[in-house]
Length: 320
Length: 320
Image 1 (cartoon, each protein chain N blue to C red):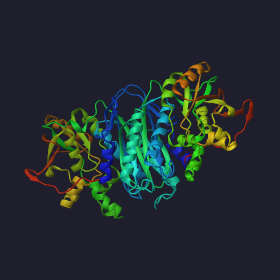
Image 2: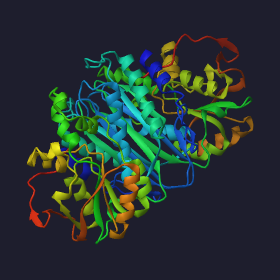
Image 3: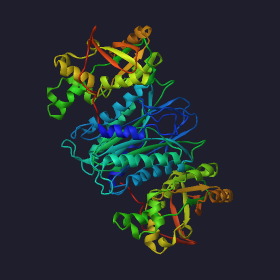
Image 4: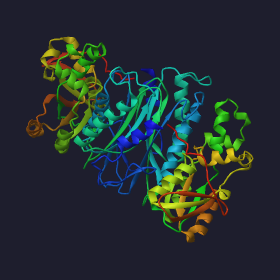
């Protein structure tokens, strides 16, 4: 059928074939060979759930691909290749791009641009028909030694990258059709997440543990604490919140801690690595914030306003 | 939410952790390390498209998992691990199992049974909510040297495994709610495909090329011929058709050649390997049929009734 051939044409012959992919699209499976650890992360994005129904094809490509790369960054891995399982409806319920063929072409063009920019080639996948636009990407990366959630050590400093809460604060405005009311930085955080690949590659040797905080710092730092069987003592006043979020008061803090969609990293490293971490981040133009420390414990988070202990009433953001 | 915890519980702590999976479920990505070639194949199954709406959870597990393994067999690879991206609706439109929680439990139990039986562990994935039950599995296997579609050599014999056409012949009866009218072997072929993993593992050293014929021998043998830039001369009278299919006349032949859903292999090997191939197949209780030979050409198929050339009017089955 026509869409099937169009997809084959749009996704064939992309540049950037990876030397370790022995066989890619065009056989029963793709073949990878490399003695180093291979990190694999799988993410599904469903229209109306993970991106708005009227998102442009370019926006869908970004929202499907970039968050997946953030999982590789959280493992200290460099992107190598990905597979794409694309379920396409016969008609798109999308005012800006109702034509399925031009949708596919625009989507493929943007995905190709992102793949080249992140040195992550398309090496396989599947295309099926279904009622709801659904994308499952598996991204694959390599590393010398993966950085795990479970490696935090007592005495480590706790860090986060970037700004928190901007994407979560933008989402209600986007869904309400009122994106114009959102600061440009919030919209960029939602539509063009910047996975911290380059930073993670350079920091990996210093890191004891790391996690992607796309479900919100509150929940994801909790995962890290439980995996490592330590407590994290975290200072709310050290969190990287922009002025527009701070102006929202407690709601701004809630977006930052429990909102989700921050494709940033929370990581821990020995206290003596702080200077090198700051220097590397600065050289890459990435903000890093030291937000607390690792102490003995059983997997709890403790929050402070500088020195005063504070209880938080919110739960982690749940995608499901 | 409740389903999310249920899924975590159902899929946690499966046995059969693979030695080369350094980290599995519970980190940002899974980590694999093995110097051998890694073969990866991705398949999506959508309710109402790849399995009937009222399929039982056990049937869905089989239809999603076993065909994916057939792609590994076609590469001569042994299963190692898989990822599962599961998109679940809030309500299942399924008369036999409308309760989503009991559906998940039954599905996970059967998938676990199949995973253990095929030594293919669950190592990661994603669960999302959506309108339509959709499963994307990526299966991963290892091999000494992958068998490709492109390796057929002039003078090779062409073989197929198993019986052809049974699953395709069963499908219209199943969809019409008239499964009772189908011979048991047809129903088994549809619901419990038997990927030729063990055979492929033992034959791999003899094979010059192979392909999974799940889209129908007509189309898939054509892919192999074009990839290898050879012609295949194939004898219709040598095809493995059961008596019930033969009784259908030309329609039976069409199911066998263009019906799809045969998770069997078409492969080529040197003429002198024939005796060993027959012996290995016999030892495993698998039927293999020599159906033709490879000659110089440009990727065409030539069909014969023994010595008489014959033209076929049908096209390959298209899933999309």
